[in-house]
Image (cartoon, rainbow, N blue to C red):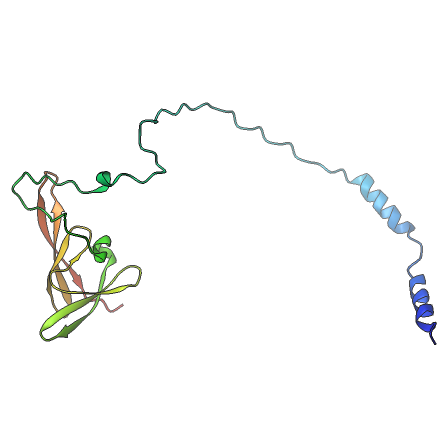
Length: 171
């Protein structure tokens, strides 16, 4: 009884030994008929020397200096000017096109508007708050809209006021 598994294994393995002549002949004919072909490499592009002449200019990999990105206002002229010393709020980083009025809140006669930004954040704003890229200040808030006064540069160092509004959207 102990030898039964060994005898069974020898019998099963004996079936694996056989004539492999047809397999050997197939491999030989495949190797003889198939010649591997590698396509030729493309010619490398011709090297053209480029002389870098912008050593004195600002590197494009370094952020610009703060004075280059700040708004320059000619305060010597006696005309409408924004207050550039005022610290800008979070909603002043969005264009008015990217802001949506989503509703209003009121308490004790004071009304606030709910503004949704492009990144789905919601802010509560009131009359006198700033929003938009052009020094927009909220003039009035009604149940359906917000009236905004923006200061737009006129190109001569002065600023002109433009009235804009945000309408309540129910999207």
